[in-house]
Amino acid sequence: MATQDPAPPLFDKISLPPAAELVYSVIAAKEGRKLEGRGTINWQPNGEQYAITGDAGILFFTVISYKSTGSVNASGIAPELYVEKRFRKSETNTHFHRERKTITFSASTNSYESKGGEQDRASVIWQIAALGRGDGAKFAPGLVFEILIAGTRTASNWRIYVNGKEDIQLDGKPTEAWHLTLMPAEQSNELQFELWLAPKKEWYPVKLHYADRNDGYLELLLTKLNIKR
Image (cartoon, rainbow, N blue to C red; front, top):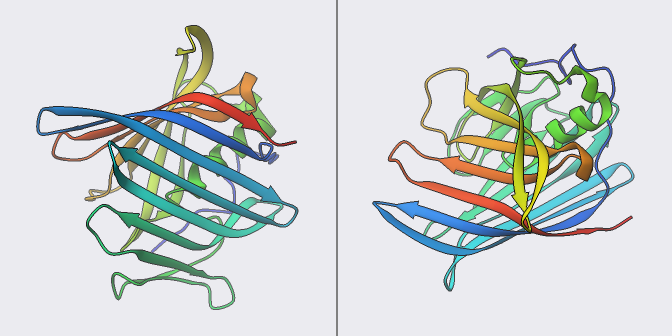
């Protein structure tokens, strides 16, 4: 399977956002029902290493929790381990073996060649933010590029579509953000999701919208940002 370069040739610079804790309001919709909850993402770059932890919960239940850890290099984020736990499902581990140049999964026997630049479901958000923060002049409506993303059982190339800028209401005030759509390049059972990154807020993800093939969705909207400089 072909993989992408460590960063699309279009982008020349990488700049990771500062460490931060982000708190979100959550809306989950399934089978015509909507429930509200709360979610968090902790983004922790530390020199040549990084860690991302996140969760989203509805009522008293955690719908999903995850952690991504790995290294940081000239091309940005290089995941080593992605751990995901969904409600009523077993925890899964996705391993990026840099020395062996393979990606493997605890939930399947699949194995993929790694050439650098691959991301997991959590790290890809921050890799795109780092591309925009480092080389934001390259972002323009209609721009399309690809990144290989590893999930819990498989890995595939995803296309990132830059749709344009939109105003997202945060605390009743409009915040300008780039709206991006991420979709598998080939037919897949993976989730499709929408991402909004705000340049005036260090390119942090201010809104995320995950949709499945059964018309369910999970939407997160930023309510609190604690930057840890």
